[in-house]
Length: 330
Image 1: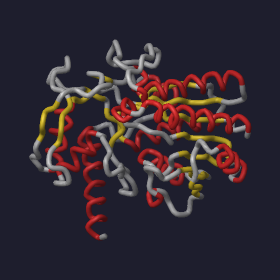
Image 2 (image 1 turned 135 degrees about the horizontal axis):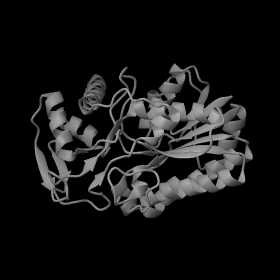
Image 3 (image 1 turned 180 degrees about the vertical axis):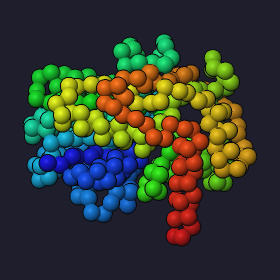
């Protein structure tokens, strides 16, 4: 039996692939390489270049590799882009996830782990926010993920399928062993952008909004190390294989940092005092989004290893330095 990792050449997916390989799991990757990189995954892992919306390709892959679990990362993730191109996001994130889910049901896949997001909460009325809070996404990105959660819930009720939907807060950092990291050239993740600016790859860092109702006026987010995140997926997979029921769980540390606090951490780690420019707020950005992170450790026994902002920043900066050296070598 194998695990199918969709989007396994992307940022989080590639970390998941390494995590599964380290644990001796059998797996296969499905990625269309629209944003991922083939080199991000080990060469000895079966790799199918294809799209999760291609039903015949997905069914062929499931049957050929005897897949009994799917971990679904493939999708579009940039909130401002989703506002500019809502139909594209609904197609890529919702329509294609529906196709993948239909293939899973038809082919008898029993376990499904879904890469969801804290964006489903929208302008959360409480902080920290728990899994029982009302869902009120304010961007097509958040809505597209919420719709997939609904499809999973209904499919699991109708078929022999159990799932875990993991609502990510802000994922950052890189593999501590230096094997992979956030490699999208124009990524919008704050810590990556700040690390690039510290290394001189960007002329300045732009802060979107300084008038939020927070202590320093900038947005507050719960940052989770990507390695801790994929370990949460591993324990979720073990939970399902042990007969666990379907769950929706937050993935965060339960502690938030403002944009300016993150910038200060990057400056400290990199020993670089780069330029920061203040701009207007962006559409779709809640002032504060911090996880009530109690349920995941309690239910699945997950214990984070890298719950420290400077550690996250250090790993992200090391990865940007590595990418810079690769570009220089070319």
